Length: 352
Ligand code: KG4
Ligand code: ZN
Image 1 (cartoon, helix red, strand yellow):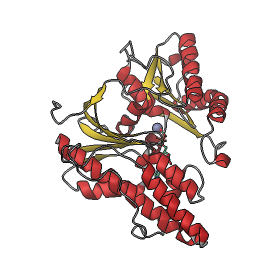
Image 2: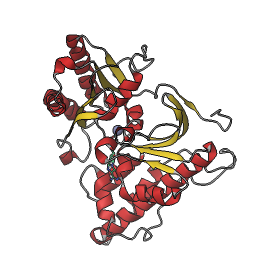
Image 3: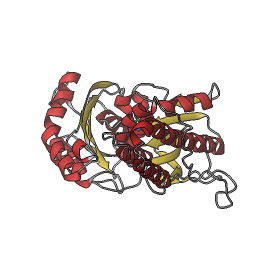
């Protein structure tokens, strides 16, 4: 594609726009994180949609200004068309379709989770397949084998809560502000990760998983274990004192499960390159544990927070990859729930 591409992200509670040049370099990136949800301790879908509507024009304007690119020079507009909150998605998709029509350029629907795969490459040209990807966000926990862009083998996913959702729910249980992830990480700094032995769900090898550690995840039991412990401590008035230890022990359980399953997946596939994406990949202890465990043997690709958390640049970059690939299959419009295009289940026989 010749000329600058605009990327739009409105799947949840970030309104973001970015302008990329042909080489995939970020010329401008603006992220507006909605704070209307804070008082509710979670995202309120209608408020999210209304705030996107209010913000999308000024956010796009600011991104174009930062890039020094006039609107009429844009050659395409990519938008995260799903999965996400449908009202929020409809704002981004409607805005994009109308703007692309007015400019006479194509619009490109992008899968939000495919966008996360393209986060690290915005900062590191070597963050390209082949790699195993661990995508951990507020709505998804996905382990993928990616031999090349567009070919995605599903190794494992969550059976219930997403990793970020567990952080958010535990943050709420501990009386911390939304979003829970960064707040739990901060509270855990002064805590003892071994004080509470919270469960590590689905870690045991069994016959159904072919004698290996299962690669699917489950986080709702862990959240329930924390809730029970907190309820017990409330009776004795100890929650305040124990908060750092609860946060640290919970975080340790998540980090332990995510790293062990991901390393098992890398061994199963026979790949020593790992990409981390999604908001939870911003977690410091998680990155550190992966760095330790991979050692000098493997490569670890992570992005800075601005390309790891929801942002328009990753959408523009995935859009550059998808440009010209009409039809887009199930992702031809705003979709609350839709699989990543090209994703199939992985089996040990999968040819790589
Ligand atoms: O990818 P993302 O920005 O949005 C979704 O696609 O959901 O991820 C947001 C999630 C939230 O659940 C948030 O609590 C979590 O990422 N998160 C973190 C950290 N920063 C954000 N979780 C753990 N540690 C962090 N430092
Ligand atoms: Zn996301």
